[in-house]
Length: 247
Image (cartoon, rainbow, N blue to C red):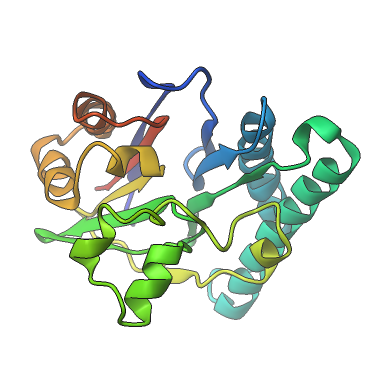
């Protein structure tokens, strides 16, 4: 059986007044969640805090009696838990004028049985380093990614594109709860995973992230190094990373 170790770090950074990112490790390493909030005043903080509270709690209830072999029910439960968080965030936004424009991304790894379930809504990301190969497991719900998918923009052109941070799906909107394209990963000893907010990518790149994951065996040291690299690289956003290592 593969065991998971982890590390986590989240900072406000040098350019923001408050940290609208939230992150959590829930259920003694059963769920790992990063959320990047948006909205006026403290609305982003509230939205991301709600996401990392509501999603894992609801999913824990739904999976309580579900066999690890029942993949369809697990995937449906993840969709329902995301939809639940989305509905609650929308509801609060409607009754509280201070949070009317709030929303948040969410990215997660859920461990159930011998399988990891990986997904997200928005542009927070999950990466995997396996046997030296570094790959992004989630797809950004951003306008630039939509243009890449349509073939009108190259990945290289997207790096500095003016719409790279404009999202068409996130929690807090009707589109936020329409389902998650959750991936199933059979973990192997030596696998390393990174869940991060887009503030990480604002100050570093995939090549550097892969190198840092290779360099540090201790996941807390890796999480610290990734955040520090993004900060020194000039990130103008909040910066959050969770690193998970399989052994």
